[in-house]
Image (cartoon, rainbow, N blue to C red; front, side, top):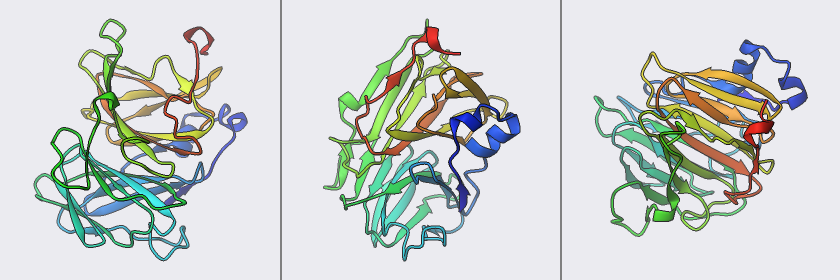
Amino acid sequence: MEVRTACSPKDAKHYDTERLREEFLVEDLFVPDSIRLVYSHIDRIIFGGVMPVHESLRLEAKDELRAEYFLERRELGVINIGGAGTVCVDGVEYEIGSFDGLYVGRGVQDVVFSSVAETDPAKFYLCSGPAHQTYPTKRILKEKKAEHEYDVEIMPENKKELGSLEDSNHRTITKYILPGQVESCQLEMGMTHLEPGSVWNTMPCHTHDRRMEVYLYFDLPADSFVMHYMGEPQQTRHIVVRNEQAVISPSWSIHSGSGSRNYTFIWGMVGENQDFDDMDEVTMQDLR
């Protein structure tokens, strides 16, 4: 598990390209038959990728957590961006199809990830935050109908179409983990998909001082990229992001992007406020 420390906006505005990438960009998240995790001191989020191919992979507590098991004091969100897979939670197996999700509450001791087919392995993207109580495990179905009592269908109001092709930001936001749909202590997760011809996300942009955010960009061909914009609204910087790479966004930073083509990204947030609309918007005229 890699550890990333927090930094001040007063320092970040002096970073060059390499230092920005070192502090905020995470590459090589999905490595065959490996679990790749990053522990950020910013709101104590842990995020990363799990890619089982030939073998199942168990989520373990490393020395950084000083815990008997990973979810002793934490909760976990999962979204699968690869082929069909399964997650076994304390002996109960959940089938997680492409773009389905899973919430696992505090106190679960054993979490094991597997793929259904080696030729089309699952790619599980994880976000985890500290938890103060236990909420039940839920499977989140993006398209399919609920079959079990632990299944949650995404509510129509949590699939929101925004923007327009004329403004190059026609996109659909799908909320997976948030109050009223899947209860958690502080973790929120969802996915934003941009339609062909649209490249801008989160514009006009915003900050939210009461929670941080991580973006995972994917659905990008090898020769494509996203310019991820960050920094204070009057001290913006950019990071070039490739397919299946993630960017850490501190609470003081904007988080927006424009791509060389359309793309998809997963957003994961932890912090003290779960009100999705608790944002400090930045007007287009004030952005520098």
